[in-house]
Length: 95
Length: 284
Image 1 (cartoon, each protein chain N blue to C red):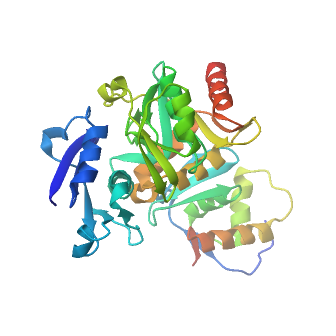
Image 2 (cartoon, rainbow over the protein chains, first blue to last red):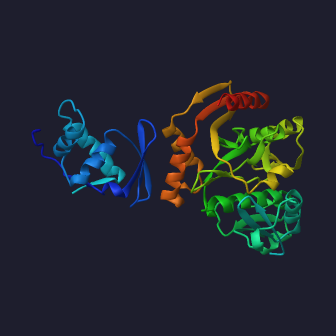
Image 3 (spheres, rainbow over the protein chains, first blue to last red):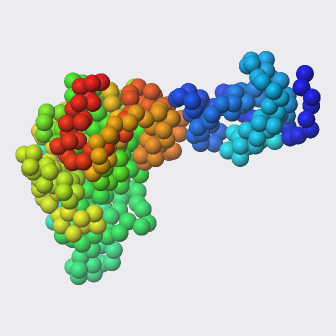
């Protein structure tokens, strides 16, 4: 279990609100509620999918990703940075 | 409108109305072999009109309007009335068409598959498409590629090719007939090349895409593969209706990008460009 880091709790639309197509290292994402297209690099698509289980802070998201992927180190700071980018892009928000 | 003319190019039925006879007469001549809109009903309407009533006679100035319009579309002198009609047709398609994904591309077909060429004005995409058509390819269009939303096939839109400046001489040197030629336009000299009868007769026949090129005229010869994500971004920028189409546009464009390779090419002159395209097509 990762040490909990106090920080914002993030939320996103359910996966059905997005269409994702892997083009190469980048994933094209069509966000149905806004009609906006995004190009995302890992781990942003995975973070959005991890929010399907409900709102979460960066540490909790790290734990959810660790179930599916081999992660090295804590990574919570990186996850928080990526989540802030997704908030700016309109694909996530702070709950 | 004093005079009007209806014609169909590919899937689009146009009605062009004008306050002057000359632009419509020139259009009728250039598009003499094209059919009328299906059932006589146009999909898009172009209006050529004087900005002020007296500008119909006094230094006649042709403003471009229609179902859709841009506030900064500058009027043209009456001597360039055919160009105004052509620009008006482009404008109406770019702003109003929703039945296909529109890409600012030229397109030619051989052996049932389509070569798309995308690039800004001056890249040579119109010239290459015209020269390829003169050497046996089927001409699908030099301005817009119409991508079907359901199956991704490319529908022809074989308007008269708009050749600029040096391209007029290049096409004439290859045996093409260019005319009329309009001097002193905002883009320099523009000459129109009328597509062959077969291109018009087969303009309801779509074909699937096979190769996408991003040509650059006047550069040393080069060929660079483009990543699908970069191709996707460039084609969103080359589309006039991607945003308006929403999810169907996203699905059509991602499918298109995944269905064919994309190459950026440079070429120093038309002959080298033609040879390079033929080589790349044969290698594919």
